[in-house]
Length: 376
Image (tube, rainbow, N blue to C red; front, top):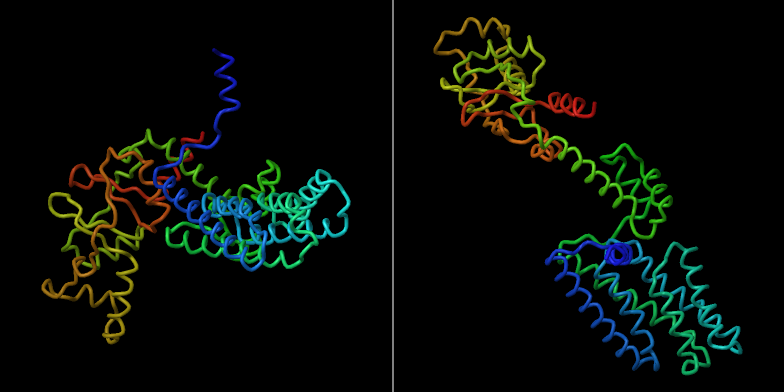
């Protein structure tokens, strides 16, 4: 029993089970691609006889383009150039060495096609099938017709074009950037790894034709985020938050608000009501903008003098600059649930509530301090 279990673990399926959405999208796409390949071959056969041997390679190309579009093997360059260069090399082989046995020609054709595809960075498995099928169909194709290159290239390009439209309609990424374009468009990644570092990792584990550096970077970044989230899942917001609060009310004079910003290195202040419930926030930037605009309107008086000399009825308060609360969580919320929000939003602070009452705030400094403590 142990032997069977070990054998199953070694020889059983490696890929994870796809979601129903992915299963439906891939199967429909592959069905569309194979039907398209069949139709194209049948139509092209009227123009150039004996093209049915291309159906199997084009069907395999359709599987790659529609089922695994993120693979480098399925990219337009690989699909079109891979099939075309394999066809060209095989036709050249059949023209130069027609006297060789078919078994020898088949071996030379597939091996040479793979070498050329690797040399041109256009490895496409169906290209090997194109070479093999051409040799097997050589008796019907002789004398060698160089016009065969045209239908091979055009049919491959058509499969790719339909694949681009299908994946765009499904909202799925298909076209991948070349390494040079990736460096230009993505000057930095979420990891402390350059594009060259990622490429070296792919070559080290012989995965250059399964993943792009961009895909590997996204996978590593997602794994890092999940690892941090798992480590922080046992820590709640109440543990991380800063409980020493600086708060203001809606009727707090702006002079007092300015003084708080002057004495403390903070960018925003929470606004609470008489019961301590969070109702808004005031940003340092908003206060400075307000003072600057008012300064131009009343250049005859200094700003601080005007603030101090106003009567209670004229005195400006925090209510004039208050914004709605940005983010708030309950104190028992796991910190792992906030990592995505902190990474995707430029928040000044996260308010921590006990039901509706403000009991603390979480800043990026609090998160960094917690991460450092967890890593010790």
